[in-house]
Length: 84
Image (cartoon, rainbow, N blue to C red; front, side):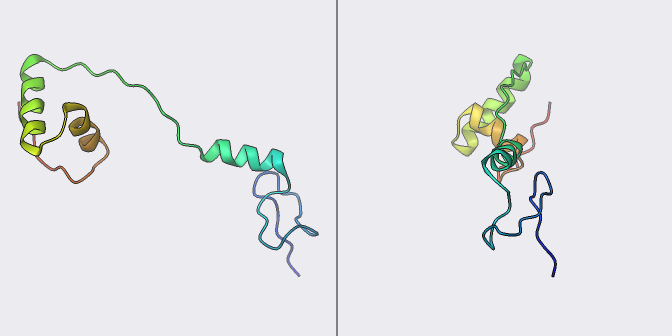
């Protein structure tokens, strides 16, 4: 019979619940921190002409400039091409 192992430290999980993936709170915390989404602040600088083009595209879509830039950078549904 194959015994499952802890997803963090590879300790055998025999004697643990059948649906267990970690051997305890330490490994569970390590796994949670590894999978946690990290927020990184980013500062962008645009020339005036590029900013005006971005603002016009954002206005066309009815969203803020910040939302427009985030949507474009994450590949969401806004597909307007900004030339300049």
